[in-house]
Length: 620
Image 1 (cartoon, rainbow, N blue to C red):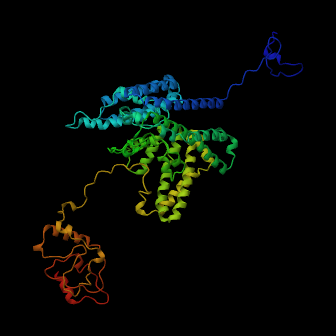
Image 2 (image 1 turned 45 degrees about the vertical axis):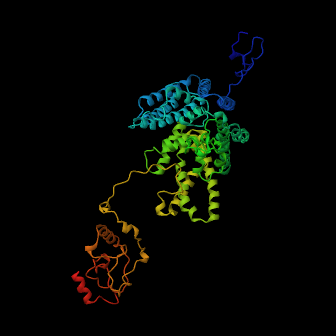
Image 3 (image 1 turned 135 degrees about the horizontal axis):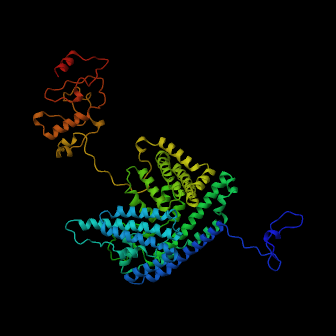
């Protein structure tokens, strides 16, 4: 008693050694529990977030089955109240971010309706940048749930502004009053934004799709339980695969020194395992999220209207007496089979996060400030990376996609089209294997996020995907025909942009009168069927042009025939050389063309031209 903890550890004739302090009873005090390491804390937080996600998604299914049997007003109020409660419970005070975005977007659509799309797009992405950089302003960092809500809200607000544009044009058109569709109000934008279906994990659906769901009178008669069960049939396998693969292939091991000393092929296989875990996680979340929308009947359209993911019906449904058959392609967000067995990188992108892909194609790709297809694709990938976050891993992965797309495009044109049936099958198999390895390679940026970690991981793989894609691009470019190099591949990744306006003619063709009906009805002879001068030598008939049938005296020609004469004279400049035989004298009543001029017809080396021929040439 009375000794300090520093003197307790001293012993006779020995140097001081630190020991635990003694308690009042003379025994050593118990050691405090070890503080958890940051990796264990992050793992526990991730596990809690995963459980919360699953609880929200699974709980949305019975809620949707109940709301489906209610009226339009009950569906609107109930879905928005449930969604706002989910946001408030998971985001806390950060719910104010979504509220500010909604109110400002309504203000733009209400008072700046002419330029509402451009203003809303700039406003939402600038606020998204501010939202991602809150740590620089010494503000509280938002939770992952707040980030997910903000991502989906950005898509929705831009979609509302884009659908507002045709309504404004219809309102301002002369003689059209009132417009066929009412402009969205603050109440409808709030209920659409806070609808619980897809509020955290997606899928994205348009404002028009949401209004169709509210206005459907026979919603209870549309089948949803059968399609729901059919969509969930593989979800338990996806969930079990995710849990098992994440246990045997942890992400933390990929950042250890032991992993860095492994061989190339081991790291390559481990990269494929990481991407498998990544896919199974999103397969599980998106299929259950689609099932929650199907339980409420959201996105149900007749099959005859050909609905597409994100867009909705692309044609007007046919009115028949037969019962309608519905599907839920509008809210389909993932096609696992076509993603795993995609024929190319382009096909894999079309079947992954399909509703967001439609949003990028219609609101970013088609409105890009470029005309070249690959520049438009690069701009779209840059916007997609910014939408996902500010981490450098997103940009490193997304900006690798244009290189892969360019490589497979020129290889399709320069190599695959030259192969036979069996050669194309072998090519498709190798292409599928390369496309999956490309996605394994690009998944590293999504998993590790940092530029140092991503580049270090790619360094262990010797940046093989970048080098291989560049080598394939050079090979396919050199083997492609020159006229196909500017537009390689069978089809673009995204729908093509609208064609540029027609350029004014740069010649004098617009001054010529249109052809007469007689010329249109008379077929033109091919160049092989046109009689040559050698065949008309002894017949005494006038010389014939390659593109005109016969020449009549100038007094009997109409203006249209005179214009055809000028066209025939213009096109006969690049004619084939005549036969060595001498050409006959033209008649005085015929008008000579360029082919009958002596300066254009070379003399035969075996028989030089006679004096009579030269005399007539001088007269002409």
